[in-house]
Length: 332
Length: 282
Image: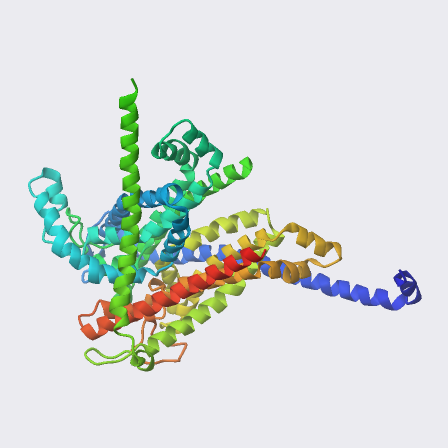
């Protein structure tokens, strides 16, 4: 190479140039490194900001009502007496109904996709489910209001009320006029909404089971159900639970789908056919109309409670999925 | 001797498998029903006036022009705010601090933000922007949407950069490239399609978001281009019109719902096409 000769013949100039180039690269390196680190820290600050602003906003409500805020059912904007028990109850019960319906159906769909479905149908169904996970919740809400609620009111609820009329506990659980909208309807809409979420996570973790394990079980003469229940599910347990918790997190915080069909009634009824409210529906319905600091603060305090509940659920979900990831990572 | 046990096992299996079939069929049936209703109810309302007239007062005809405009503007602001920060943060996590404590914490927090209730984000922006500015504004709506874009972009950027083989980076470093050139010219180019997919998915996510706009951008009956004033947007208009007692408004709500769904589906399909095409290429 003649580059050595060149360098030797221009000893002064090239070194000057290259050191300035090096310096420039050094500056750019520092700029990019610091910019990216700042952006990463911004994400942390955002979460901190969310928590601080919610806590700050809810101080007036907790000062005025203390711990009783969580255990009082009263919600009276006129006398400015607020309690969050009815929305908390509604949030938990609608999510419970959603999970009660959603988990078995999602697991069924996931089993269908991974074990039963003909090969050519696998991709279309998986794609359809993933696309449906992206449909905005307001679409589920408007459908629930105009299609599901009238259908339940006309055909399903009278039947349920009639069937359980004489049964001791169930008669009060399913009592009352068929409104169509209410806790049960909100729970059903939520179960439809979480179906794609839980199914796609469950299907993904089912796919991580090594084929050898399943084949060995089939080779021993296991039926499909025995393979699923004794090999696939134990192997993917923490992943499946993680997926379910993700779905639960969505259901707890879901706003629009619920707001349309819950009925927005601030009371705890013994019947799940009666209208109720949830934390997010309550905030969505009343926040812009809330007058006075105490009213606004009571709504923000509910937001804080909701954030707390979902934070715990989501954190648990992530930890479980992480554990599965680490285990499958170490096995490879 | 074991015929009874065998029969019972076979029977249990058949029952559960029938149930799984039933679950799959009913799940797909319900979801198809929702899309079908949306098409039937929304398609009837599609006409030129939807795109050329503003939202009407009750009882008269009109369109969704101001709402569509507001949604597009706030989606653009949200994307413009969330994408750069998200890409930078994702770059830090995948390139600089791959196994640092900061990355572990940010990844965990980001996953929480990814599925945090969007209404809580709305409350946060209300507290920070609306209260301090003293009024609802399109800016606040855009910022709220940006906060929803951010975690999606962080997540996909990190994932996509981690997929770039280290050999590429080492090769670039070996010929003397400084770190920032390795990242911008090598890693970003290799991961470009995946990162773009992430941005598309984020846009799809905020297109239909309603809850964070309810008390940030609020709503506006009229066409407004003032970023410091409340601005109409499709999701909130759908919410208001669907719950109204006027058939005209309800019809517009269905049309708006159809528009949103079609947009979201197109974005999602586009994102998927982009990611499958590149995975075939590589």
